[in-house]
Structure formats: structure tokens, C-alpha cells
Length: 386
Image (tube, rainbow, N blue to C red; front, side, top):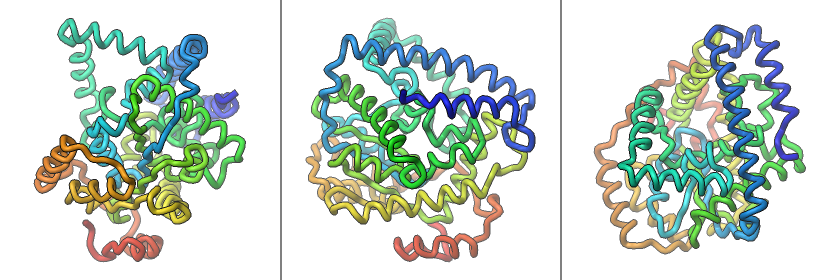
């Protein structure tokens, strides 16, 4: 069975009976989170696995769907991965990507078709349900939106689809028990081959389900910082995959990731310090810098690309045109015009996410020393941020 019941039961037990001295201590806030999340997750997964069962009865042909030349965007969080995914996803002649509603509520074909029927009915009525959802999102995700625009109708990380088998690195923000979840953060190196293959087989099945409904000759596009430690496994599962690794100066990545992690921890737990388990986040960032770059050195040039954040955000048109030429993708005039517009917007863009290295408790000297090879490899300035 692909679902990791053993891990789930262990983490649920710890969440209830082994929380002293951890970020998961049972405060009143944490109890409310548990009392909501556990039943909601159980009901959601019953629906999802019923959907998978119906797929095997009514849509078994999805197994024959070929995943040709999928594109995977990896790299540390806060390195421009979301910007690149949502930009490339606008090239609808070439790409199709998962949105959050599909990842969470419709991993199966049966569910996709069900929700698509409801969406069509809602649209004919003037979209009252969609408008209400957007209003609620604007209220609930207002503070997090300064870092990352979150919406059911936006393209999102499909790493979250692995929540449906309880095998995702991002479970750490709900269950901050690092010893149990650390292997998922070093996926290629620390998980047994059999287990890796089962997880990736489930992921591929979900990609085939997506392409069965939305493919129509297009390539699958995925963005996942949490796939940075999975680059080898991605290559084994999708031998003709194109992999793009985004890199950004550690001076920006470290404080931005810590800021995002703090907000996520605060959403689901009651942290015992301003920056929960900073050493874990620091080690994660370190591995996610080096592992994908080292593994991509083994790939042929036409299957890989390493892009600097500054190059992408300062001149999206030039960067993406070069990327298409490297991968042999055809660029349609409509998308080329979109790139020109994005390049104009980039000149006036200013991030609303404010953070600083000092907030992490890590000094500039420590960063330069730890990431000496990263600064040298990508010619990052050791004295100045971007």
C-alpha cells in the first residue's frame, strides 16, 4: 500500500502524547488545529481514494497516458520558482500545470470532472461561489500573500499531492518532529530505493490523471522546491524530463525562507522560539542548494538549465527565450508578447515581503563561509545582496 499509515500513526501519536518542549506543544491553539485538521484530513482522503477507485473502473485508460518531456522547476524556496512556473504556465500551447484546487480536492480524474461540472454551473449563474471563495481567500491569506499569492485558482506546488499518501517533506510544518521527516528532505540520499519508487509511482499516476483531463498534447509543468532533493528520482521516473534549477544569493534565500517558515509554523503550531529549529531549516537550505546542482551535472545540456534569480526577474524575455532554445521548445507569438509585457513590469516591481539576515541569528560571515562554493559557482557577491 502506498499510503504511509505507519508514519501517520507515529506522528499523530507524538502530536497527542509527545509534545513537551517542541513546537507542537498542546496549547489551546494547537488543540483547535488538531481537532479541525485530523477529521478534515480523514474525510478528504476518503473522498480522494474513492475517486482513485472510480478512476480504475471508469477511466482506466489514464494508465496509457505518456508523460513526454515534462518540465520540473526546482531550487530553494524563495528563489523565483513560483514566478517562473506561473510565467511558463501562461504558454498554454506548450504547458499544463496543476492548480491548488486540483492538488488538494481533485487528484483523481473522477473528482476533476465532478468539480469541473460544478464550475460550469457556477459560471452560468454568474460565478457566485467562485467570487465568495476569492473573498474568503483574500481575508484568510492576506498576510501570507505578501510572501506568496495563495489561491485555489493559482498554479501551485504539486509536492502537496504527496500529502495524499502522507509522504511529503512539508508535513514538518504540521508535525514538527524532525527526526521522522528529515529523510523526506534528503529524499534521494536518505530514503530506501523501494520507498522512493513507490512515492514517485504515485506521483506519476497523479500526473497521468492530470494529463488525461488537461493534457491535449501539452507538456506537464511542475514547480517544487521540495523536489530539489528528488532530482535523481525525478530523472529515474521521467527519463526525458527537462529540469530547471533556480538559484539565488544565500543572503536573500536564508532570511526569506526563515521568514516564510516562521509564518507557517505559527499557523499550525505554538513555537517555543521566534524561529523554530533554525538548524534544521539551515541544513535543509544547504542540501537543497547543492544536491540538484550536483545531480544536474550528470545530465546532458539539452535536459537541464540553471537560472539565476536576478537574470529571470530583471529580464524575463531574454531568460525564457534562451531557455526555449536550449530545450528545443517552439515559442508562439502570443507568449512572446506576454514575455515582453513581463519584462516591462519587472522594471518597476518591488517585493512586499520584508526580511533581513539579522533576524535569523546567522551572520554574514557564517553565510559566506558555509556557502563559499555557491558564491564562487554562481559569482554571487559576498559583500552585497541583490
